[in-house]
Amino acid sequence: VQLQASGGGLVQAGGSLRLSCEASGSQLHIDAIGWYRQAPGKQREVVAAISRGTTNYGDSVKGRVTISRDNAKNTVYLEMNNLKSEDTGVYYCSALIGGQGYWGQGTQVTVSS
Image 1 (cartoon, rainbow, N blue to C red):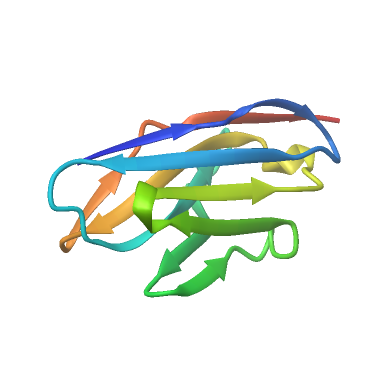
Image 2 (tube, helix red, strand yellow; image 1 turned 135 degrees about the vertical axis):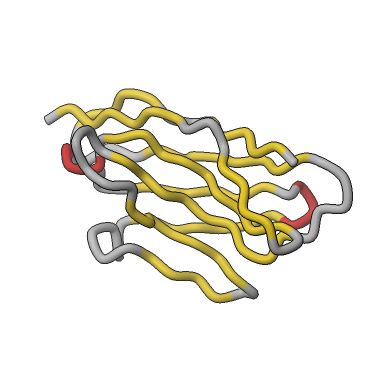
C-alpha cells in the first residue's frame, strides 16, 4: 500500500490550498483515512479524518478545512481556506487499511504572513 500526497505549496495568509492523497495497492479496504501535520519543533497533530462516514477535525482548523473522500479513486482531499501562518508545516496522509496503519511521504504547506 502506498499513499501519495500532493497539493502543498506556498500561499499567502488568507489563501486556500487543496491537498490530495491517493491510496494505491491491492485489496484496499480503507477503514479510516485522514491528514496530520507537523510544524517545526512541534508534535504531529491531527488535522482531519474520515472513519466510517464520520468526519473529525482538529480544533485549530475547524470551520476552515473540509475533508472529503472519493472512494472510486481511493483518494482523500483536504480543502483548506483562510490559511494562517500557524498552518505552516508538513502535512501527512495516513490511512488504516485492513487493520494496519500507513503513512504517506508528506507535503509541505507554507503560509506567508
